[in-house]
Each structure stands twice: as structure tokens, then as C-alpha cells.
Image 1: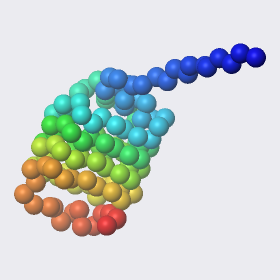
Image 2 (image 1 turned 120 degrees about the vertical axis):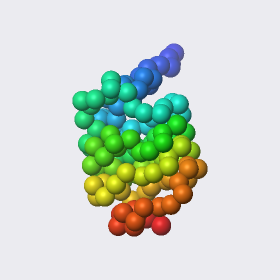
Image 3 (image 1 turned 180 degrees about the vertical axis):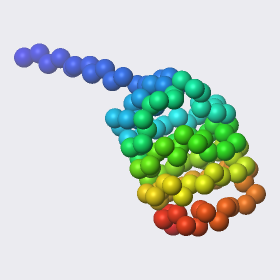
Length: 120
């Protein structure tokens, strides 16, 4: 008998809009290392409310994009290595338990972060 190896093609999202659209199915919004300063209008209307993991690391955001607040179910938010100077109110993210803000330009941590149920 001859055995043939089957090749399975897996679609890997490459554009920002594809990454947002695939996050609906995967639960992970991974837009790291895309040199982003802001999110473009093209992603408006994509429902990301059920996303549980958001990774915006290694970009050039100077604040956490407000679109992240749409991710009501988010448990992990990775903002590592951006240019974040201030943090929007994240208190609406009731399930957030992991938050990475390292390697940013924060000078202080807002008190509203203390009320989040973050893990140590």
C-alpha cells in the first residue's frame, strides 16, 4: 500500500480586517507587531464582543484603543511594548484577569485598575 500525505490548507488571516473577522470564531484577537498607531475605520462593524484574548503588543499605540472596550468577555489583554501614556477606564471589562502593560510610557497607574479582578 502506498500512503499519501495529505496537505491541509489552513487559512491564516493576514489583513487587519481578516484578523478581526477570524477573532469572532477563535475568541482571540491577535494584532501584534503590525506597526499600528490606531485602528482603521475598516474594522468598524465587526462584532468582537465575545473575544476573550486581545493581543495588541509590539505596536505604536499611545493609548489602549477604545474598540477593546467592545470585548466584554475579554480575560487577557496584552499591551506589551507600545507607546501607551495613559489608560482608558477598563472597569467595563468585568472578566479581565490578565493585563500586561509593560514596556510602555506610563508615568502612573490609574486607580480604576485597582478595582479590576486581576490575577497576581
